[in-house]
Amino acid sequence: MKLQPVIVALVLASACAFAGDISAPSPQEMATLINYDRPVTLSVQEEGPIPTHEWGNLIKYWGYSSKTQTLTAYSIVLFAGGTLYGTNRARAENHIIEFEAEHTNRPNKDICVVTMSDGHKVYFAGMAAGPGGATKAGFTTLPGGKYDLMVAQSDNYEDDMPKEQKLIDPAEPQSTLQEIYPRIESFILSQIQNTGSSRQSFTGDSPQGVGAPEP
Image (cartoon, rainbow, N blue to C red; front, side):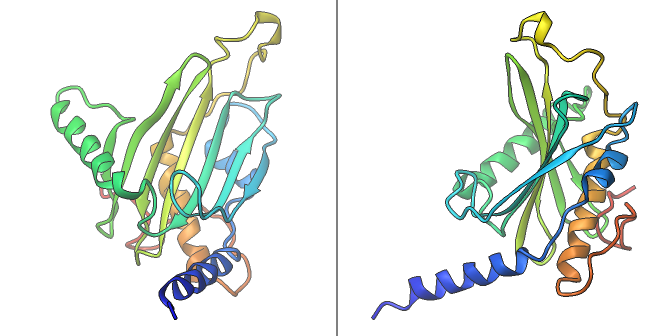
């Protein structure tokens, strides 16, 4: 009798059940964190688990958007630790490291490595670009190794749409992805650490030693 597949399935099921208790910032909290230049009412879409997702073993997805008020949307995605990008993970991280080293005279804030105060690294890079818009993201393996986290920002340029269909005077985010990411990571870590207790309020503060970039 082959027990290994059964054991693996049980472990994944346990991880998914545990992560099912993890919450992300509410739409109101995200709008405050993003700091749009005018009031925006976001909606949130939740999905998961999707063990066979093309990017890895996706445990939970939260997507925030407002199609009538802003062209910028955000995603928070939690994967099983070590599964994000699969065998391509090291290559993706090395590409970002090499790009940053080659552009020290002209740093690109969208492609960089940020070391958090507890020593773990967050990798920022563009994910997609073309007619219609672009997406950039920051990703890491969270302390403890049980989860991978990705936070993504998608900008809709509407350059592939007729003028009459374009959103008039859309709200713009005032916080950058690098400013938003540490506070979301801190919030998600607080949910992981307090699973089983009441939902933690979102203050945006980082616990000491965790979830804040090095000065």
